[in-house]
Length: 182
Image (cartoon, rainbow, N blue to C red; front, side):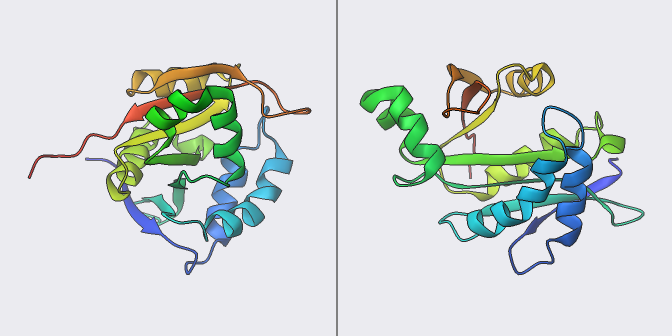
């Protein structure tokens, strides 16, 4: 039996422990302290977007947050979606971005990695959102993240995409969202 459980979170929840877990999860390069500082503001912005869905994994014994994930509906006019749509072109945008969920952030604290938490969190957040497909971006040279996503059903649909000056190249990944038959 896992030593964690997953619960949804919303902006009505106290974001302090989520940001603390995020700070731990992304303390190392390529992210570092700047990414942790920006999460609170980013979370407040993204939490107001249509379809916002988030989950945290809590340690069964201590209740401490072990990891977090969130995303939102991909809609025209959003910074990430518009840049990905421009790179993909109209046909691929219609096929892959329309009616999709953007998995924006996933982070597991360093002490809790390789325990199945990331896969459980992604599964939980995708099960709670309404779209038939999901997309995400991860840095092209982040071998650990790419290996995880590829092993869990994601496919690279736009390799080494540029989000603009000052950004490392990112791979855009896609996957269908499987729903249990009722």
